[in-house]
Amino acid sequence: MGGTPRTFPAPGKSRLHRGACVTQESKSDDANLAAAYATCRAIAKREAKNFYYAFVALPVSRRNAICAIYAFMRQADDLADDESVPLPQRRAHLDAWLAAWRIVAQGEDTADPVLLAVRDATARFSIPLTLLDELVQGVTMDLDDATTDAPDTFATFADLYRYCYLVASVVGLVCIRIFGYSDPRAEKLAEETGIAFQLTNILRDVAEDAARNRVYLPLEDLAAHNVSTESLLHHTASTPPTPNERALLAAIAQRAEVFYKSADLLLPLIDRESRPALTVLVTIYHDLLKQIEKADYDVFSHRASVPTPKKIATMLAGIARMAFGRLTS
Image 1: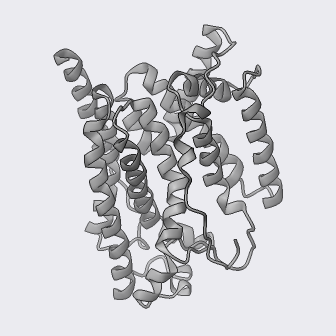
Image 2: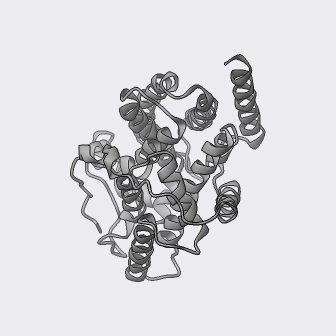
């Protein structure tokens, strides 16, 4: 990776092949499985922040599965982001963890509650195991070919899109299998909704990423707005963005707004009982983007966030919609 902008091959159609699923039932008894899901719910409640408010608006079986997938992602993230461990060792730890998961996925007994729950969830909701491989590929990208001096960058928006696909869109493709859908158009719309979410995250985290020697805004966009990587990497926290930087960030926000339209189209394609949860998730993320826009793209002076009371209100509205839907179905 280093100072060379990252490029990736186009995602293959095989990633959505349902035949890749393993449908073997868990060998663990119901009590062990219930305990495994309880562990995943606790991880999600503690760590998920924006996601958890949407999880609560799901029926129990779907909520359990989503929490299991989140806990799986959390394990991978924690291994990848542990800066107390040298990069080569992190890569080795992740490879070993992924190999262990693949053995469990084939039916091997495990004492890891997260892997036990994920195996059950993938079987229960026909989640292709190739998607979980791509989830791990996304969280490990920053470990590949890394150096300590040159910043991590992307040359074009197409390169950034591929990164967003791996770290966010794949999550969406997993989630819609848990949410339930029958129209294949939902897959592309879920992919694009993930792009909207990740572009929002990237805008929010410009300063934080710069502190870690990363610039996730495409170099072609920086050049178009006459902004250098150095100006972003060394931007003083208390200094607002320059006019050129604001224009750059606004252009990325407008791209995100286009992708949020896919979320609106996705919603009616999702099973009725899952729509409140997706609505909560989209509302919270879109509100975060609106906070950034309202601050005139000053992502350096403070980190944008949606106030917790507003998240709770959105979650409660989602629960109410779910309850009403059950009464009228």
